[in-house]
Amino acid sequence: MLDFETCNKARLERDPDYDGRFFTAVRTTWIYCRPVCSVRQPLTKNISFFETAPAAEQAGYRPCLRCRPETVPFCPAWKGTKTTVERALRLIEDGALDSGSVAQLAERLGVGPRHLSRLFARHIGASPVQTAKTVRMRKAKRLLNQGGLTMAEVATRAGFKSVRRFNTVFRELYGRSPQALLKEVLKNGPTT
Image (cartoon, rainbow, N blue to C red; front, side, top):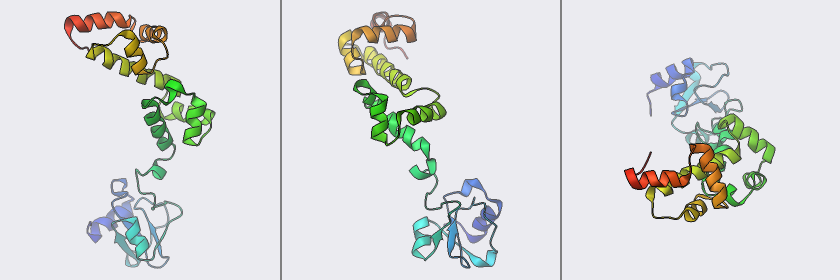
């Protein structure tokens, strides 16, 4: 635990570097806050510090409704909608859009498909479909670099429904066929 003076200085300055490292409890209100909370600063004589939110609650303090200290920084609730996008990315990485639709992915995440698309636009800058396409191409390129597989095996393992679609997407992205990359790998070794 940090010393009282360090915590108090960080609290008074609302220093974001200390957010989540300690919690300020106010004896007159029985509420505890994060050091960055925007409420009016209590008198120093009325405060104490706790290392964790559960420790403050164990001592009888309630969480502030403004700064929500029970949602310590970087927990899912604190990260908000970014958490939904991160979960979606994990599902896409596992092939959720290889055999399913954006609507099915959104349903698994508990949101609507339009909302999921808006979240991807905000946090990723691309649609879920484009993201899945990029993930498939990364897998395909890795498989091609490893060698020893037919184009049909590479396409299937990367998540494409057909070799034809795999060839089209590969050519769009890299400006050449997957066979051309495979020949380069066989001749010069794996590419980056």
